[in-house]
Image 1 (cartoon, helix red, strand yellow):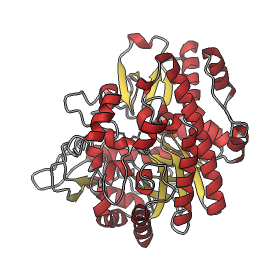
Image 2: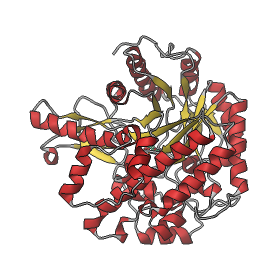
Image 3: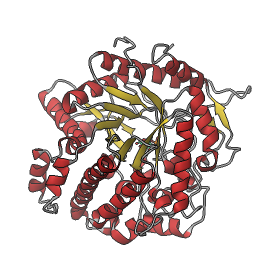
Length: 489
Ligand code: BG6
């Protein structure tokens, strides 16, 4: 892999967060309950067992709704970003961030989703946040839907399975586009829209237990269809309300290699990757690929399309493609006989050439270059790496310092991979490492799974001062940004 340090002028270096994992303040200033407020830390469950960690039942939701607990429901407290955001923005500005990815919690603006009028206090909070970013020359990149839909919509409408949710989402989008039209230029619709099959509750408010097993796949596809239509309508509204703004889709890029060159393995990997691309395909090309329609036919899955849906999808594709990239997987026709690894709520065959993180996610910087090249060839739209990073247990040493050389090495290799793709002609707009400040883990609700350049003094149960400490990687990333990707050592 070569590093020609080809980052263009104006490259958007920064970091990424999501409201439900950092804001806290789960029940203040009129905020309603969201699906994220039901995520519970399960100390007795193996953190690598993502199904047991993240699975949810109707009973779990009932208990969450009746509970005021913020110890085990860690996303309710986050890292207190709601109150400390100015201090955090100062630190991001000190690192030289050009962009910060945040999300708007729908439940701060429409607490249940069905209100006619928005909650002014919620609108004011984000207005203040975006103004403070701008004052520090940090461009906001705003996700509209990051695993935090109103719980009320899940409970009363079955989440995105109901077509009515499209209208409520578009109402929310219009309000925030209008309010922040002078503050925000870059938007993303659904975070990792493909995760609907991996965790339907957090992604779409669907509790699978409500439906017979044989209907669940159809229900998830139907909800996904509603999200695709909503994404297109949000793009339409954005362009009408803020003509100069750009909308991106956001998908999980899970690159899958064939286990070896056995043609059956290669074909399997091809099809697995095609499935992974399906979600961006619809939002970029404005139509469903034929293979999905064939799959529906074969499985007798019937998806209701309104007459205008195909036209909507076709007319309002996204402007750019953003994605998260953490690791690659391997597919094999003999998968059941092989050793497995996890990663981002998915499982695959272990790749003998790659190391894994403490959470068993395979580290593969070349896979990032591979993905960038392939995605640019496929979409021919600017790409944005909206998430990348390594979750690790950081140690504060006796001198109060965190020497996170493993994180520096991880980023060094991934940034080299981006440079290499850029020098190959790939158009990359920006790079926002995930959890640029430690925050609550999406899958496990742990604080000890840390991604940040900034350490937050809090443990898995929320004990701690919440004070912020700059890690060694903080100073390293600052130099990377200052040199526009030249100084990586
Ligand atoms: C992405 C999500 O899938 O991975 C984030 O968009 C999440 O919300 C990140 O935090 C890392 O996953 P985890 O489970 O380690 O927090």
